[in-house]
Image (tube, rainbow, N blue to C red; front, side, top):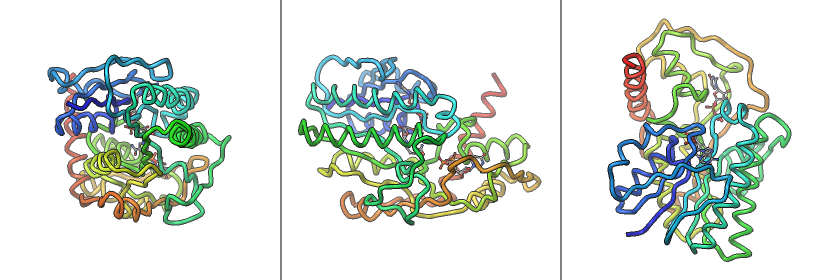
Length: 317
Ligand code: NAD
Ligand code: UDP
């Protein structure tokens, strides 16, 4: 049985990765310090003999006994609200945390995949963004703590590949959504669902004409899995190229939740908020034979169902 270590296992994407690897027949070690994640996301895995959970901060030396075949490094605050609240932890998990995990991968001769982001392109001056674009990032702006940590993460990963012949993979993840996002993580989709479901006004930042391209979690997990098992070591964009304005998605969620009275309030646009974002996924198509398959309405409905249940549970408690 192949053994995989997943950091950030109690988070949104990490917990779905744990499910995927368990379903594919791997032994999984999930590691997390619960900074932004929750054990609720992986509670269903605890009874399984193939699953172990290590509570650990990956910015400290990481020890795992025995062999390891793969490491997936997904630990990091990921929503703008989280990384603005925890700027130093964000910088440390991208830099020191990544260094520790690369060291572990070298020791075990394991293949390591790191979670990078479309934020390495910053507020992009090229559209759509292909992997060849180097980005437009403000290193000292509020988002710099996340963006530069991820850029450093890519640089040190490539250095381990080049100088230690380590097998490395880099996924540049574009905005992803789905069940197990935190309702209060401040990202647009959970914020809009939470507001519509609890009768509050929808907060649209700026004029809402900025764009994003939202990928459903099941498609994202499939893309990451294919990249890990591929033989391609350069960065690959994984995301859904269907671009939409923030105002349009707010209207879609309002209609889905069936709350036509929900009003929209316009708030100040956060500093350095990217004006547009859409992945060029030619590489993922060509190298991984991957393309997103989930229609946005289906993905939004599944997410809606999850948030409804979450709110119901919190009311009971
Ligand atoms: P999340 O906040 O739900 O999950 C992150 C997990 O990492 C949490 O469980 C948190 O407790 C854990 N963590 C943070 N610091 C840690 C540390 N020092 N040691 C151990 N665990 C730690 O976020 P997510 O959306 O699941 O994002 C996961 C990864 O994917 C992140 O690396 C993020 O940068 C990347 N990513 C996500 C998106 C997205 O749209 N969700 C987009 C681009 C990149
Ligand atoms: N946004 C918004 N209202 C909110 C939360 C976010 O209008 O309550 C906007 C935000 O300014 C950005 C977009 O939605 O332009 C996506 O934000 P998110 O935090 O989801 O992710 P980002 O892509 O900015 O990291």
